[in-house]
Length: 172
Image (cartoon, rainbow, N blue to C red; front, side, top):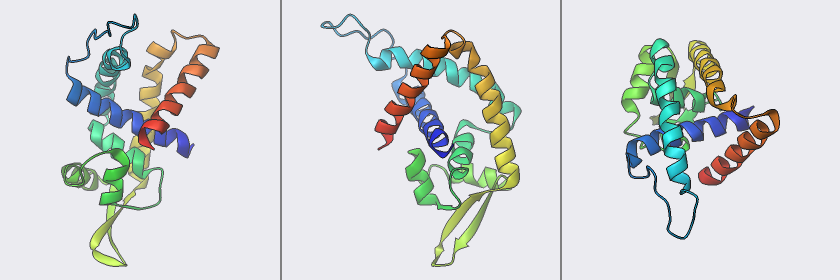
């Protein structure tokens, strides 16, 4: 299960990054030497649709996309420093401070001083944080049936295996 969670974190981080950085740059990009679109040209529209489908779910649960990414990352480990968390999700450690503040205010995470270095805070997901993360994840996966339902069982298995493999490679 932890491997699947790590892949989910990577995919969500990728989704945020693609949506933020790519804009319309990849829409329809095709190499002259190839008849197939570039990978980004194929993925960006799907990623945008996935983000658009997830946003109402996140809103209904009172989370941002980054909040969900943080909770997913913290759910796969016991405790992490803010720097280790930022590295795991591909964010700048100062970029996630507001997200961490909100998650703490909402009772979804705890920050504790590191006994080895009082300047460092250790982050952990709370029971309430895990419950909201699990509820969001279940709702998201139900919504993903819109796309996965287009595939037969073998295609779905292969598609998900390939995504896991590619995202593992991307984050290695």
